[in-house]
Every structure is written in structure tokens, then in C-alpha cells.
Image (cartoon, rainbow, N blue to C red; front, side, top):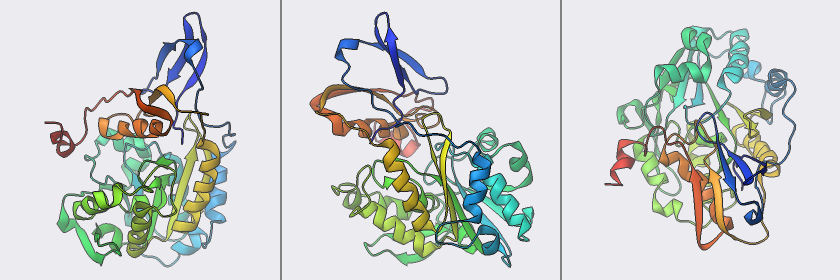
Length: 346
């Protein structure tokens, strides 16, 4: 499964490659005669009218009633969004979602936008504005999930494989539950999006440390692009179903962060529809393993920490020879990651 590798062109000293790195990218020269292949997203036409396509997906969702119909008669709503580490076009999506909710009778003061930080650091004020836009940031209640504050979560029992389920109480108490996310290959869960906004997005440490434990992550099918038989995917799908989710909106984007497709509706059916589309766009191969892979972690905001940039390494593993070399370009503008993760390097 290829991530965003960048573009290439001939240069006087060899092959010039533009890697997604930080906010601005990084140009590097490589010896042209040694290049086997450049892996990148397949060509896919970005949506001509993203807002219009999004409205259609809300009005004609997958295995679900339209959002406005679902919202009628509900007292309040909680919309879960990704934190700054995911480049989701939240401003666009939330504008359409909030308009639909207000038409159905749910006013702004009864909408909570909950940032699915998982176990990541809290959001900064300027990041909230970057994620949702200044108008939404000023007019709506936007709060972070705090994964290490157990008393802000409600216990829902254990999952089939023994994961204790602790989910943010603010989400569980909402009459209408909506999640917004991004679908792309994921190194453990197969694909991001869908159920991942709930687990690990708004789950407590007590849940995540078991679900992220060796019994799950060391399974051979807990890998990029795999859903069938993947215990990480199966378990957090079960957990998300237990917590409840009335409606999702997920986006697929190209390597320039332009929307290619929106899927909306039932948490599982819409997610799987998006996965089918993603598989056609992101899968690429080489004929035989190579000695050296030069790659990136897809640039800002995905490469701000080593913890997140690891995904660039794991994406390259299937095509590098045993004993080969992976050269990863990642800005790591915030260093290693959380204090707890950083302690592992002491």
C-alpha cells in the first residue's frame, strides 16, 4: 500500500524527487540509473464540486436515512472529528453537517464538536481554528477528548477479546452521534476512518492499552490494507458498535489533499464502501524487493512526530529486501511524540 511519495522529474544530476515533508515539501536528487520505480497514488479525478458531492452523500447516504431525517426530534448532537494529526477537510464537512442539523431543529448551542485526540496531546487554540475554520471555532462548543482522565468516560463492559470498553461520556450522552474521518491505509487497523474515531479516538487509556497490546498488534493480519481476520479492526468495530454511532461522514483524498470521494451513512457500510474505493487508488507494487526505499510520512500534519512518521516506515517494509535500507524524510517538528512514548527512548 503506497502512501504519498511525491513526484519525480529528470534533473541535471539525476532524478529530482519531491517528497511530502512538513508544510512545504523537500526536493532531493537521486541517481536516475538506480531508480526502479516511483510509487504514488494512482490518477483519480478530484471532485469538481466537493460541497455539492458532500450534500448528495448526506441526502443519499449508504444504508441509512438522510441526516436531516435522523436528526429530527433529537435534543442534541455530538460530532466527533479527528485531531490535528489528520488532514481532514473538517471545515467543509462540518459546514454541511451543521446546516443539516439546524434545519432539523438542533440549534448551535446543543451541538458539541468533540476532538478525537485518542492518547495524543491536547489541541492548541490555533489548531482548532486551522481544523474547523474561525467561524465554527467561534460559534460552537469544541472540546478535546482526554484519554487519561478515566472519570470522563463510561464503562460499557468488555469486548469479545477482553478489552475493557471506556468511552467518552459526552459522546455517549448525546442523542445524535456523528463521526467525521479520513479513509486511508493504516499500519495496524488495515484502514483508518469509520470505527477508529470511536476506538481509539474517544476511548480511555484503559481501553487503548489493551487494544494496542501485543495480543492484537503482533497478529499477522494486523497490517496495512487488511480487514478480513484482522483482530484490531474486528475488535474496534465491535467496540464502536457497542458505543453507538448514528451517522458517519468519511472522505478519501488525493496526494494534494483534494477530496476524491465522500461516503456517508451507516458506520460500517459507508466505511467499507470508502475502503473499496481507496484500494483502487492507493495500491501499487514493484516486481521484486529493492535495496533502498526513499519515502516520506506524507508531510504536515502527518509527520510532526516520530510516533506518527513511523507509518512511512511501515508502508515501505513490504518492498525492501531483508537487510535493506529505508530512508525516511519527516519533519518531526514536535519531536518524538507524547511524554509517555518519549520515555521509551530513555
